[in-house]
Length: 469
Image 1: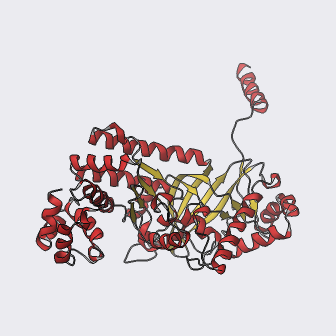
Image 2: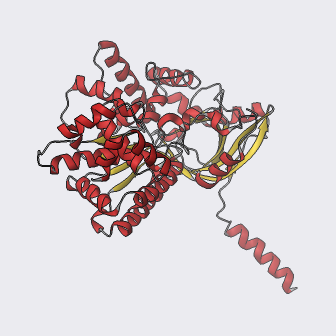
Image 3: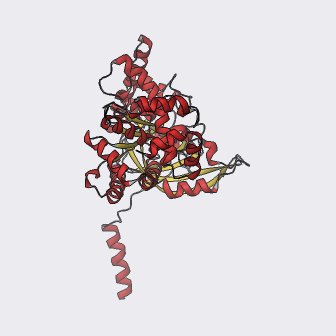
């Protein structure tokens, strides 16, 4: 009798106090037509509120989902990705055509932003959204994930790398998905299944389809990664969950703090508690954060403690920083020289966008693009940071020299060395004497004896110059 009463009590208590388990709808295995109709019906009020201008904007956005984009012919999402969501960093343009193009894209962005404020777009119950992400979303070539022998077979090392490091990120663009599993993207080897919590505001893209758009500036946490096969080719299934950007930002801030604590321990200088910074805005933020950690740890081991302290002190004098980003450097304020005119800024942005790293001499800032060359996991090595730090040392030693020049590489002594040995290291080193100095510094402090020996053999005067710093 007591057992029966206990069971009844549990049942009654369960009815009165239901579990706090969110009911998340998953339409993928339901009848396709019924599922699409249900989504369309749910957003009917949202569609009814749309003006003709707003409908036109959504139509343009949808047409661009699978359209190839480039710097020469950009669409909104492309520019949001390369600027990290900061369209205000775009140069306004020099010609009427350029000015109109930038203005049109910014208007499209504002219109879509406003749609996310509509109460009719808020879902009362959570759901799963399916979306395909391609290499362009992470600025990583898809080919680097597959074996050289078989383009349909994923590399086990790369899968392991993703499982270990793809933990969180931010959507700097507007991400489109399908509740029924019919992803709107035509290509993409990363198949995301995203858990959208209740009360999230979404934008319904088309009154005849189920496509829904997630707002930019939204955080995402990865729960699991597995491999599946689709049409004879292996793909990656990513289980993810939408979270606030603040949650992701706090994780990035924690890693920045850990990096700086390591620097303080090595240099024994508490002034450097904020000198390294992670400014990450993309879906692969955790990948860059992990690589930046490894890069800095190796860098501070390779640079002599005295020289490391001097260089960091020099940066710190002007409240400079060493910043890691996951977007093009031309759209990062810290990489742009101070006090330049509009025409200068336009050309400077285009030039800097081609850089993997940048030392801003006017602001004493080093900025590193973790996605440069589109090969995350391969490009973020300590030598890139050593090269940029070489520019810092060049600047510091120049200002502290007897001639008080901006760069030690501009002295007559180094000019003579450069003229003699500029073609002896590599092609990039021969660009100019500043890059020659930075490349020589990188070779000297790469940690590879082969690099150091090459410098000593091929450019002995340069080797001795760097050695005496």
